[in-house]
Image (tube, rainbow, N blue to C red):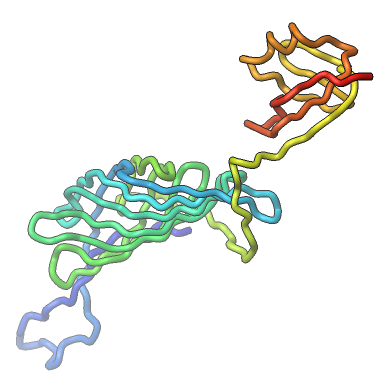
Length: 246
């Protein structure tokens, strides 16, 4: 992505001189480079997750962020951003789209932005209208970004770095359910038991720290049992164990 200079664009009035074009120059504009830095924290946020058909976790966050922007006169003041982030948290890439408003004394500067998210950073393009009447805003935008938490080290123009690119494809995404985690069950004799894990009929499950002592006190290697393990925090974890007769 090429770096773009942030500009304020407005129709320029031509001064009347002896060599002025009679009807002016069609489409003539003025341009000046401006920039600002900003940071903002989440004032409210909602998040939901789902799993794609290729087993990627997608997190969608809608949030309002408030903070402060400093820089050129048209870009200085309290800033409010409303953003929707759609992030593949498995591969740490995604998109962030939204709007912003800078409360400049007398009149607001506002616009919208679309950016690529890559490993905690965003880079993209913002367009809108500046406080100066008739002025249009076009800017590179970049920042450190944590969905539902904050924008940090944000920049509008001012040497904004280029960003990554992502390819968005159609596909389904199955909502995740925390109330019905994936689980496994096994019946047989305990072939291994320690303070960290238990193995029954080839199924090994981690022991929760608050249950390890009790399990080791009541069961031993060779006991016939039935266990259930839920997939939590990236591993199978014991949730139930009961003795069974031979």
